[in-house]
Image (cartoon, rainbow, N blue to C red; front, top):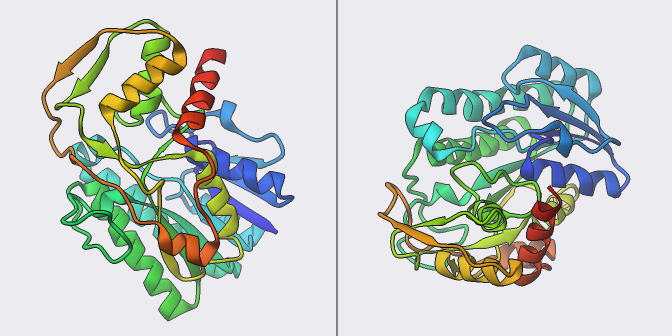
Length: 307
């Protein structure tokens, strides 16, 4: 199967590319390598064909029309909440107009399906836990808004134009290749700072809980979606919350090093507790997490120790 992966040089996208290549598929990677987007040439799988292009560009649309992929996996995005609040127009240009460019090109190419990386940020502060696919979506950032909007575009293109889709609302994804210098990715940030012997900042009281999922499990779900889960949206996470304090303690134990903690106030827009009910993806795709938090932290730490 010929598959295009946009954002395939990024943290999550590159692991998806690896899974597709390992499964024997012909993979094309489209990535702009934007310095704030996380795409790196070091993440590229040598067995995939790489094209340095922006998803908003006519050149990207033309490439898809020429290559006629059976599936397009959409991981390219403006993924920073802070950038989305500072520059909401840029966020919408990339996440909405970029997707529309890909969808139109996919239709012209005769592409069967688009797999889309959505986000738990579409929910905002949950009114009830665990969240599932039917939970109200009340996003609290432009990033969350654009991800919610693009889900509606996927439904429209399926209903009116026949283009199939599968969308995953991700929890907090972590693992090797995640940027330890950005605003998100607390596990990568903590791991790198502990390894370097630097102090770690913990906001709020540190008891806030998020749902952390290892990136290898994400890649496996994206592989299943190539032939399953048509026209469905799935929550994709571990199904349980882990506090920031616990993550810090686990990482210190895994690394075998203690570092000072600096306590800081709550960050604007931070959500205190969020975790997911992933029974739908288990029942429909036969997917469930295979990598425990303990094992995932070990693999993440091992990656940064080699860096």
